[in-house]
Amino acid sequence: MANTRSAKKMIRKIERRTAVNRDRRSRMRSFVRKVEEAIARGDKAGATEAFRQAEPELARAASKGVVHQRLASRKVSRLAQRIKALGA
Image 1 (cartoon, one colour):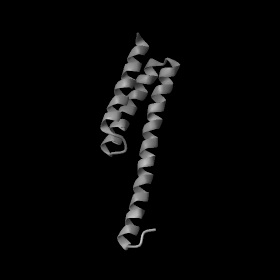
Image 2 (cartoon, helix red, strand yellow; image 1 turned 135 degrees about the vertical axis):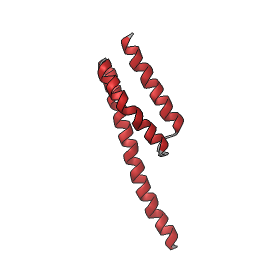
Image 3 (tube, one colour; image 1 turned 180 degrees about the vertical axis):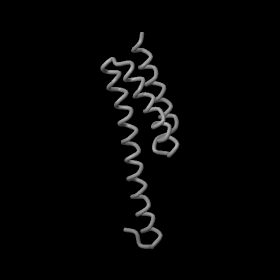
Image 4 (spheres, helix red, strand yellow; image 1 turned 90 degrees about the vertical axis):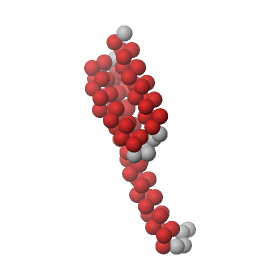
């Protein structure tokens, strides 16, 4: 258990930051899931629209440090590949 006032304050700050990051990560995953569900249905138009909404969410999560920049970039790239393959 924290003893000093500064340590107790850090615990409060970490709890708030953890909650915010959890919400951001959940939001990002929801947007990605919508794209994946549209791809699974074979709905290229729906997948493209969902992808347009998911891409900035991934970038925002990366810029806020919730996920690594490369992870976000990789997810965007792979989703774009899968959407492109729907038309083929």
